[in-house]
Amino acid sequence: MFHRVVPDEPTAFGLPSSYRLRGTALTPAELEHELDAAPAVVPLGAVENALLAGVAPPPGVVLTFDDGYREHLDVVVPLLRARGMSATFYLMTDIHGGGRQVAVVDAWYWTLDHAQRPELRVRLPGGNAFVARCDTREAKLAWVVGSAKRALLGASAADQAAMLRELAASAECELPADLAAQLYLAPGDWQRLADSGMRVGAHSLTHPRLTLLPDDALHREVSESIAVLSPLGQPATFAYPDGAFDDRVAAKVAAHAISAVTCEVGTVSGGQDRLRLPRRFVAGFA
Ligand SMILES: [Zn+2]
Image (cartoon, rainbow, N blue to C red; front, side, top):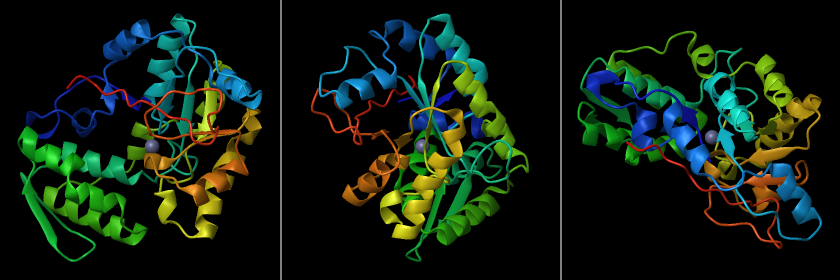
């Protein structure tokens, strides 16, 4: 499981980017190292076909890249193709480079990476304020993975928007109007991924915690994101946002997709549930 593949350039206060601190950014050279060290790379379809046939999949690893970042097409695909490898790319279908909406985590990270002031503040959904500096590595890491970030991920959409507004105000920086275009592939790029021999899967419409959604919203996030990608002509596969799923979510995905990937570590054997495929998080070396 990979996410961003970008140069390791300093951000606000000379610190590594939030992605780097979180472990979700590799440099292109680090990705090349991972690809060259990988055992046999197997397409997801080979695993799906084996599980459908009730046999163990071929030995090796499946490569996946989440969240539809722009560099997946112009940086990652050439590195894969030079090695005769293919991968599966899971993207959000309502959050993309042709729109204005940005994923909550990307907005949070952008603000931390561009903060103009060293002390930041947000009000948590319970009402308490979280006030802390962000100008040392340890302090920034607390914003990237600590209690305020966890509260953000578990908050309602309205509370998330309020937290992002307050964080940006305390940082004295506004999200650029074209941030989505800076971050993500546009819908026209999805076909290019498929035409490059890559598998394209759904990662919901807007990257919510699916386990927190009522049934109607869960249905939309799963079925509509899969339907938007159906013109690509590939079997539907799904990645649970933040790895969050339960029996209700998996049953909904099973009605629309042939496979789904989690964030639980493990290996796949012949009896593996196709809707709960394990993945190993590959972190950068920061
Ligand atoms: Zn994601």
